Length: 111
Image 1 (cartoon, one colour):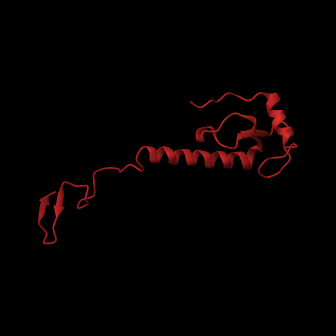
Image 2 (cartoon, rainbow, N blue to C red):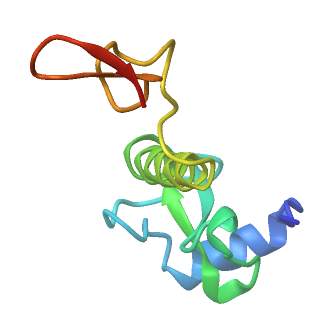
Image 3 (cartoon, helix red, strand yellow):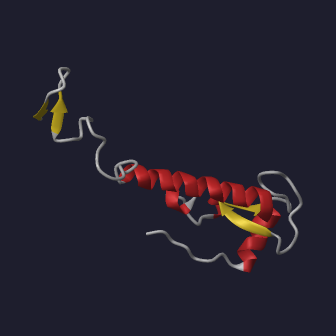
């Protein structure tokens, strides 16, 4: 189960001060209320809410791009867990997924 507790304002300030008020990815100055706390290893990838896994990122380019990558990676993991991409509709005629086999002479038989 993923532990999604909110991070207190005091803890957010401590994380920001630990980084000298700079974004952990791009190094831009973080303004009060204009930064977000990020998990270096995402919670869905067995990350934790420990201080060594948390960092402050600027909202617009850095945190959004990292979150997008994390969501895409999680979607791929789930897709593979469910057996890859699911085939849509009936099998293609003549493919190995059908009940029939077509021979070189044009005759058709059961598989």
